[in-house]
Every structure is written in structure tokens, then in C-alpha cells.
Image 1 (cartoon, rainbow, N blue to C red):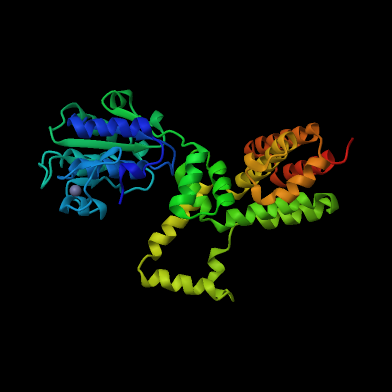
Image 2 (cartoon, rainbow, N blue to C red):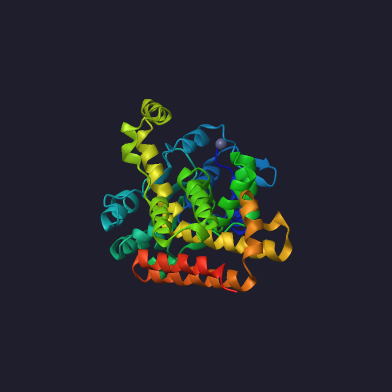
Length: 379
Ligand SMILES: [Zn+2]
């Protein structure tokens, strides 16, 4: 059940919506903006459900939907006739016909059973200029009962005339400690893993959730730290072999011929539930949100050396991210001077920038690993 009390952080947004619910002063158009994975859909659905509920009441700090009335039950199962999500035919654009047929021609029909008729437009940044102009017509003369909630990861994609007619509610990054608490308490993620995922997610709750359930990420972290801990004894070619191995994309398609008995079982179970396509979708979305293995590899090294600096300065593990790698971090603070660690962090940044600028990946990684190896030696 999506409730306001389940939305982590976002106090300003919640305050605004709560105010609309309690005073009845609901705007005809909102834009909820935030990066992918930041919870825009969840927030929009929570607001829509609460608006439509006939038996809202104060629960804790919030005025919440009752979650029991027919309206709430339909809203939860995405089958509410007066909460309409605008899909689009083409994957990469929302065309003028999508907006005309599904929104502009539809708003004239009064709500079937509720006070409001709510339209949610996910991926609003994909609206073409023509589609936005069609939407503008409705925004200029909205029927009293309509509420349009546009979701977007890019406010710059909108015509100024659209933005000026909407209340823009940005999704703010959530503090690491709140994400960590959420992962541990609500999702039963173990403490060190929750801390790592929270740090890597940089305020994005969806990304933290994806990372926490992403075995590839956890394996990548372990292999990367192992590589660094053994770097003194490795020649450059075997370092690169290890790097290639750990950056290899996961082999989903080979699952069928897996000798591991666990995996096919899981797969069958998913099919039985008819959840296969959903599962695939989640997987793809999860991968996109979790970022590429290479980006994560850089982040892992960066956080590792950040931990080494912190531990070197404080000898206190309370502020470490990789608390599960304490024995390596302890040995590393003896090996590296502050200057060494700063040199390595600079080298990591240079390498990441080079790769983003399309310089040869292998060559860049080789130079970076040699920098790391040498930093521990030169005195
Ligand atoms: Zn209700």
C-alpha cells in the first residue's frame, strides 16, 4: 500500500500535497521532477489514491487514504477508472495523438465515480512540442474536476508555457542515513550492505533498492577490493584479465544451460506466476538504474580510497562505507601515505573523465592501475 508515511524524505513535496488534501485546494496540474528511480510514480500514485479516497483520515503525521474503500482498492490495483495513466505508442516519444485521444478528448467526460479525474503522464519529457501544445489547450481551460500529474526526469524538455501552468514539485535527494535505515528496517538488508548501497545511490532510493538486490554489484565490489588488495603481486596483464572478468556483463541468457540447480527453479517459479515479463522489465530497469559496471567500478575504488583516508585520519570504523573490508583498510593505511591516496584518487578521476571522453578504456584502466600500484611503492 502506497502511503505518505512510506515516502522517504521529500518533506516539502509531502507538505504541499497534504495541504492540498486538507484544504481541498488542489491544483489542476503538477509536474513531479526527479531522476529515474527517485520515486516519482510512487509519489504520484499515493497522492492520486488519497485524493480519490472517500474516507481519508489522520494517521500519524499524515492525512492518508483509508486503503479499504472501493476507490482505494482500485487505485492500488491500477484499475481506478478516474486515475488514468497516459501511455504512448512509440517508446521514445509521446505524440500529439496520444495527448489528443487519451487526454484532451477524454477530459470532457466527467469522473465516473470520484470527485476528481486524475491523469498521470509518466516520462513527460518525451512529449513532442505538438503534444505539449495539445496539452496546453487543456491546461488553459481545465474542467473543474481534473488533476494532471506530469512525471519527468528533465524539466528542460518543457515549453515555458507548460511549466508556468503547473506546480513544479522536485524530488530531492534523500539523506544516506535515511536510505540506510529504510533498507535495513523495511527491506531487511544487512547493515554493511545497506551502508554501501546508500552511499552509492547518492540520494536515489530506487537506485539503492536496485543495488541492494543486485548480486552483480555486490560481487563487483568484492572482486574490485580483492584486485586492489593483491595489486602489488600482479603483473599488468593479469590485473587487466581480472578487470575484464569483473566488468563482464552478467550472463543471463546462459541460465538455461546452467548446471546450478537453484536458478532454473527460480525461473520456473516466476513463469508459473505469469510474472516473467514483469520480472524481465524490472531486471532491465534495475540494470539501467544501477548504472554500468564500469561506472560502479570507479565508484567502488573511489569509496575504498575515501575509506582509507578516513580511517587513516580517525582510526575509527564508524564512518567507513566498506565496513566489511576493514582488515584490508587496516593494512592499507600502513602502506599508503596521505599523498599516495590523494594521488590515487586524482588518477581515478582522470581515468573516469578520459573514458567519458571516449579515450580507449583498456589503455586508460591500465594506466590507472599502474598509478595505483606505484603509489604504494614510491617514497
Ligand atoms: Zn479509501
